[in-house]
Image 1 (tube, protein in one colour):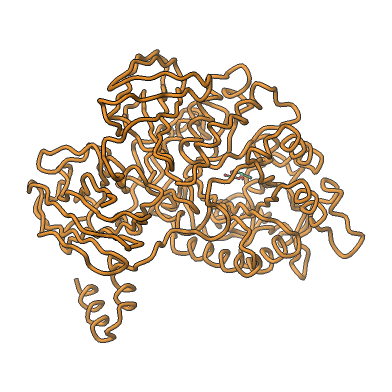
Image 2 (image 1 turned 60 degrees about the horizontal axis):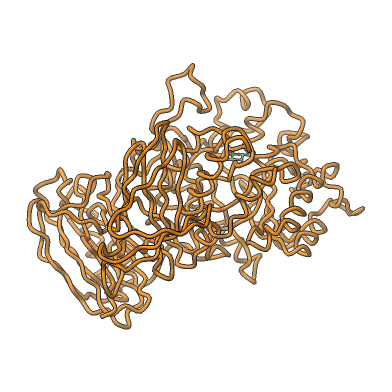
Length: 632
Ligand code: GLA
């Protein structure tokens, strides 16, 4: 309370809206604040070394796969980034700190001069029409330095020479990687902030210097989020400075820890939502689950990253085409980066065909940038629907479990009218079928049916906001205390094996803003009235909504029935380009929804603020029911 008074007093004294915005996160800004720097207007596509080779990388392996990407036609379909992951660094030269490449593995880096350079390598990729990616870490050391079973591929030399991460070296390294060496993409990992605590054996043994830890991936409460964000801000400043043409892409690799699922969208082009994928079905479920409820946190310029594709190995190899196809279909509809993780030199045609499915690539790369939203949600079967830029829908029916399912797919799932025909195109077989109102489908264990659907919209003359999550940014989602999300699958095939205590909830994000769902997963509902469409978010939140030319915004607002704070008032306000357009009366749990309808013609950015000065945000979900942008 004291803080609030001081802040508003200060704003009044200064009389400036800038000061008000600084002190009040719910004050409208009139601008879209999610990340749009760099080149990620659609999810990046390409190839990465890690899943196929770990640190056992060399130029021949990489260029071998790059050549197949071009020769097979995959490059022409959009696969562009060829990314070197961990394992390229020999050492940091002392005393000038210049990074030295393992030139025995990258012969083209030999310059005969002062130090090896990747310039010839990136020139080669660029000449092939491709882009080049590199890898580093926020800390002084990388993940392989902490986890590799052998020293073979690891940096060599003294303790200081083996410090190949960005910590304290951001400006120097980013200039080298982007300006001198010509890279276009950087993945920034985080083990250096987590695994080098003073008491860690690798530190007490004298092998590495201690740092932090700033990060605890199993306990968000022990994470220094502000420090991590500060480092990414510095990296961004350096990227802008070294890339005057803006051709760069920053990939955040904080694995869903540090509550990054709430703020990654503000700091980079893609952001990992979970720990590493492995070629195991259980691990796919974990990574998928960390992204699937986060549609509102993905936008053109800032995508959720459930990790690289693992098609080609284990449960996703050529003997498991059902699983491999599910993996690709799900990543495509979730707007995940499509980064191939296989050695393409040995990948069978049946799997290359999966990577090359142009219809699925088109779903992933659709310019509207709407991540799919859950239209049916249960632990074993889910229906995901993604609104495409021409009004068609992509729909995936995902059987997570081990039993067969007969599924009813309805016009309601698609937000299509149930009295007009709906045409389905199967994106694997290309077969077309049509139905009205409801159709029966069969889905086998671990299978994902995926279609493009064309029909008549049930909402005439406009879109629900929940159909266009790519244009909605939960700038402030009301979460005060990041809490692990208990709904994410936890697999016994995890890193600790089954000997330990098991895979406990660790990825924060519980209570985040949701499309067509209340923040904790219930149906949207105000005073007993159910909403099939809408945005669920906690109180004391601010949503930014891009308006692509609509004339009117309409919604029915109130405290959601799932709120356990039954006494606090919430006031709903709608702003257009920073100016107040409408306010509700104070609403409380159990009060009927209030209608808001305001003209927004000419408005570029709408902001939706739900304010409750005395409310307990995390016990106070609110609903923007049937929130829609209409032509008139
Ligand atoms: C971490 C990342 C992986 C990979 C390895 C490299 O585990 O999450 O994607 O980059 O480090 O060591």
